[in-house]
Length: 603
Image 1: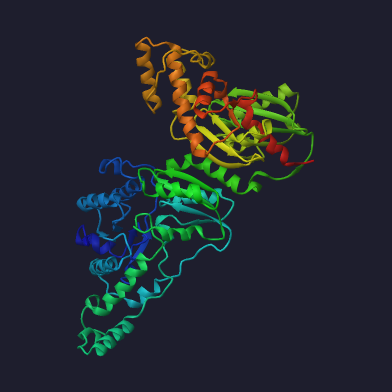
Image 2: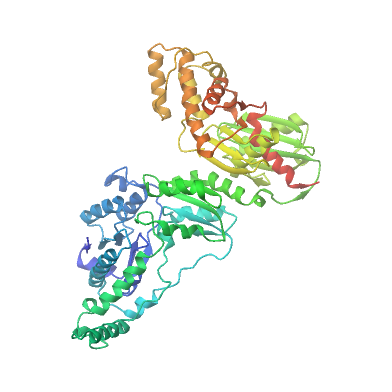
């Protein structure tokens, strides 16, 4: 499949032939491109969306394939070298070949094994590519530049975290670096390229080897090997073929990607004594790396967090809470904040959620002075200020009486008055452990997401999972269903306890589930039966999260949905264990934040 398209008018090619050639795979022969004065760059940009790509490519293609197509269709790329690593890249190549959007398009047929026959085929592919790239660039092969392009790969020699799995977009990796308490090594897909550990042989030495070989065998030496230089095409010489055979081996002996037949070499990524944690990245609609994660989750020697993106910048924002919570679990010092001296001895925690803003004030003995819950308004900052004012009023305190304040929840970063911001995952864990030290699994069904958190005996987070991509199974879901049934949330929480028909709500989507509810109402199904079906739907989704995180007793449920008696009963049946519901359940996040604020003050 050594195909190339040099598209566009001659004038355009004259202008752009010295431009940047983009690549997407670590098996791309970058050093060979440098030999023809080619500049190259990893095409790893995450667009805001796929408006242009969606017009020309199947919607089920993985996010990176769409991002690649988006960049080309937007006119950001004019030269592209691909490697046929998967069906997505093949589809992208076919579409781009027909689109005539690129001045230079080439796909290398890289076999997925390191066998001798593969090396031979890859060597032939490299020679064909060299001829096509030379023709496009208008430059002859420069051996000195080829050799100068080989550099030993640089790896962190200090305690660090590693990004593994599918390639991670530039903007998302920068977010990961900003969040983590340790340096981060990008070992995902294209980024763990390891060519350059060995310098290539010279053409002169290869010609000498060929010459000596023919002398030993008693046969006549090829004309190209009889002289240290050749007057013919160097790319057709036996010495260059030998060089490409060496180069093919260097390419395929790298740490394998998941598309290679023998993946055992990937274990080297885990054998670094300085590795302290793994962030495992997958891309929507790409299954290659999901299999590796399933194994790592059981056997990884260090803490591991799995995140998935669709390769847009909008999806990256949803991952921030997960990343920050993982950072807090890696380095507990992240939670401490700046120490201050004891003043009046009062500490506040504010949990800014999507539906309510909760405030807890503690005294120096960790006794709750006040805990209030108010609806979240249009802005997190305004809602937090109003909630804090009300809490201070009920406590008979002034703002100056508060020695330290920690914010948590989705609106935490928008609250400017806090001394420290900590994720709701860590705060719910701290609050739950304070209320019930024997709890090992916390279930929090919030307004716009669901979380299940595993704790150790000291209340530290050892694992967590979130459902933050869809409203199904969240408080918002129940609110929508209550509206359809013309019930308040309080009324809905009592319905379903005495159901007669075991109805199943099959839709995983909130919108479709609402349509199902409307249909059930039209069929004159009882309200108790419908509510039980809704409770069962939420319980099934939540219990799946419990299993994923390895949940074990004792269990506690936090958040406002814990008031829903019917749901709690159904969830207990699915989990197979009783669930502790404390009176302070909805204040658990704010309580944890207040406890962290207490830690910031010297006794």
